[in-house]
Image (cartoon, rainbow, N blue to C red; front, side, top):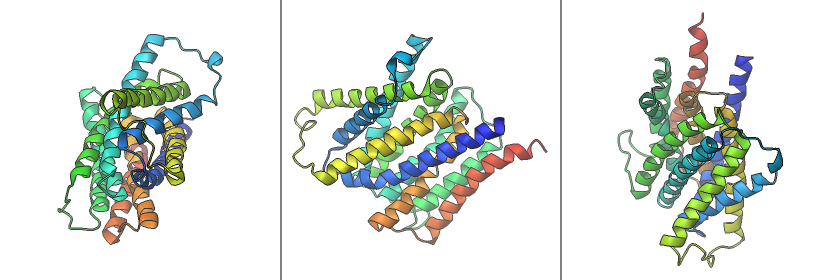
Length: 298
């Protein structure tokens, strides 16, 4: 029964990563029509409101309401920072690099876990290192191995990876204690509200300016709201209910592979032999993290 639950969690997180990987391209295209703050705030608001249509609020029962609200507020705030930093970075970097640098949270999650007294088993670390170097190869597929050529956008996305790692730990704590779907909906709506309030106070002249938005711009917003928020993040919540944080991060590092594939297919971003080798290493790390615990029992 435990094995079935872990397989289910693995599949949910893998599907979430596929969906996220597919949204890096429309996220980049969206910057022709929206500001990063506009796009991020509206996609989370829209995603949360869409999900709200699928639940009956009267049936929701939460025992620890103060803990639930506190966790939702904390998760929403960290999510808002992570998503906004990522979106700012996407303006000046490729979809492939965005996926690669975002996946750096694979090394940050276990490090943060140590400070939270959640020390992973030694067998996790080889998988983390394999996935990390796979991400390096994938993200530097158009240059030398040690020539990362960081630009302004890359730095923003690397910064976002820190907050994605923190968010993953908050989610892991919260989904074990509260109803997953209502937690997801509340954090999405609060995330959108936080960013919208920030825009009203600090970017009041542009937050409600839609002169550049056309049908394609609206499509990118809807696609990312439904795909990234409604499907991707919600599957992450359910998947993390069944998979520990560090293992979840390893599985979700496959997002970098999917981002590279979609960037290659749609935006003609380079994916050469080194990129394919990096993708293979990430897949190897994901497979090993599932196999090694079973070998310890033999």
